[in-house]
Length: 315
Length: 241
Image 1 (tube, chains in turn blue, cyan):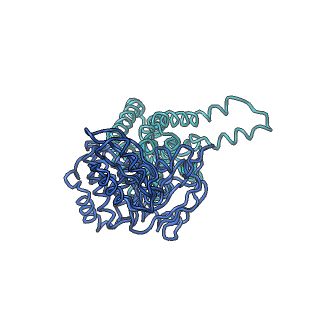
Image 2 (cartoon, chains in turn cyan, yellow; image 1 turned 45 degrees about the vertical axis):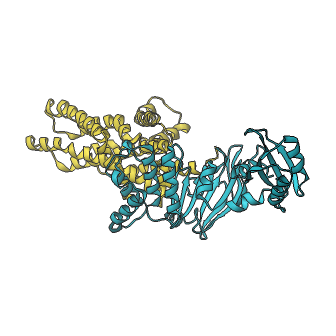
Image 3 (cartoon, chains in turn cyan, yellow; image 1 turned 30 degrees about the vertical axis):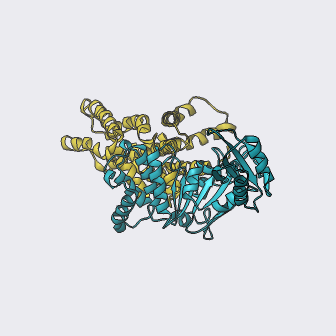
């Protein structure tokens, strides 16, 4: 759907985006992940045509934004990090203005806005001045603006920044709902958000794309071991020895005692073997009851930290 | 363009800006009318418009200073630039909105002509029309300068001061060229300076002479200012600074 081909944006000596290439597939919710200042907003501003890249191309179904700006811009809705609102207008006036600059047919405006305000749940504030709305509502109005003209692609830059936890949950729910009919690109530095909402992730670090993959593959591929958190009754020394004897165990780390009479261990095994049954049998044989066995999934956070270490190199 | 014109025009009258401008304009116009027409028993509109022109130059930043600078500051330009509208649409929409307010104020000032026509037989309408045409065209140039200045900064105050400074400079150009005597091989400097003299052209309109060249000059002057404003905005998109 959208192909980003080798885009570079230079600000003086700094490369804000460095030869970035990735694709946005039709119908997906793509998470665009990176630390603050990694180049997320710059990339999104380039895709939407707000700024131009120093080099490289952005193609939407084969149309280039610089050559056919009108065609491409009509098909992209954009919610920048700071919603582009006119505070002295009412929500209704503002959305009508957006309709008129986005070529929505006058006869269609009323029903179109009824649908959008219903979907975004801002119908009750339609006649209020934007400057009197809370931040959560302003964000929603910004989102409504991005949906005007029914664009194929909706691009949102950090849509939940500065919202309270309840608003964050609501906005995420809304994004998932929008994802049913639109292709969505969502930038964020909040990992939970991406894990919760997105199907695929592009990770950017220091202007470079360091990963482009589905969430599942990402956490799976990068893990070269399986880890289990164990809580076992017995003496620390004996349990440690028994765990070490199990074939496939790579390491056993003592994690101290958190419950009277038991000890915690972090057991790491090679990814090919499943040592859970062997651990159970071994502990039963040695008369050390297992109180807890918890597989430790490699979290997106770990992946993210591995991919965006300070040197910017991919591990 | 129409959508942007409509929003800006409405905005002038949703906020106090439109009223402040029109009020100031008519207050000064009223003062000049009383002083130069009523108290001097004169039927010449040109005196009022000539003075009003200078006053207009000083109050035009009220109309233009926020046009583009505020969009940039509030990042609402992201909505406009990422919409299917071209930068020309944006600049022209805003320019014509400011011109429309000027036109309204100018039309309201026609009341002076009505009063003069009622109580004086000395007034002839064609020269008055010519005067008004010159006034509107010159005002449009000042507005265009304001739009350009508003495009180059995020600060409304800086935009206002720059507009004022440039307008004053253009006003002073005529007097500066007569300040010095240049050797003949440097006389081209005076010629170049006179290209930018908005006021010289106005004196023709003021005398009731309608010259197509002058009309064309004013329109092109505005056009060039707006072209530069478009270039400034477009350039910023490509900026690497």
